[in-house]
Length: 323
Ligand code: AVI
Image (tube, rainbow, N blue to C red):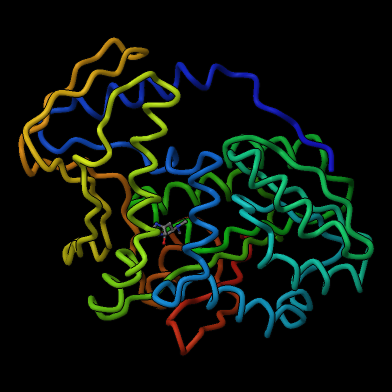
């Protein structure tokens, strides 16, 4: 696999995002994209195997069962761009189905270099597939694929799986889909994986598992700030918390300060005070209804052509066509 690496100053961006999030008035917060360094990506991979977290398995089940049906609905020839490939495991079924029909270029776009490497290892054995990875933010990577790599007469088939869309709030999710649509041509398609609403007890167990892997995934964000920004977070003085936000229809992850404390972050030139019980909001996972996905698609100038639902762990795979 050939990988295009990013050139911008990532430490500077991380430091200013941390500063902005921890000094904002009211609720402190950190952007969830920073959960995924090498350690965080590996922990997320473990989460996807936990019995309580059915999301990834539902996504994979749907793709395994319906790959041929999905691919048969696409206008050929197509090139595939995946936003956030992760380990690449769930994409295998689609690429195998495509590889049986045409020689296919697969462009994974991923901010984590280790996830890109994992994805390459997982998929390189599939016949008729060439992989070119982009270590970029989603929209930048997709734009580069669309402008520099799309061949004449070729359609783009974009994959946005695993309910990563759920990590945006609802208005931002529509805005993101509209941005993706602007990069595409009419007739291009987007396969969107979306986690559906389910009972609170099931969700809380999924985001606060018994083994404590999700807790480690969340706390690793503080460990990452210690490693990369020379900070002194005492990980034993913060606790993972998952809560349901009924109004937003989301599960939120927070890190709760166990006592009153001050943390120094040298690279950001910052001392941050925490009250006992105060939290840092690190992620939201929004849950959708099937009807809402159609509405969201329409608002972003896509048409929802077909939808596949997993009954065991309510989850939807929706094929959206750019109008
Ligand atoms: C990547 N994303 C869809 C996961 C989710 O369910 O929101 C991230 C995650 N956070 C905690 N567990 C998994």
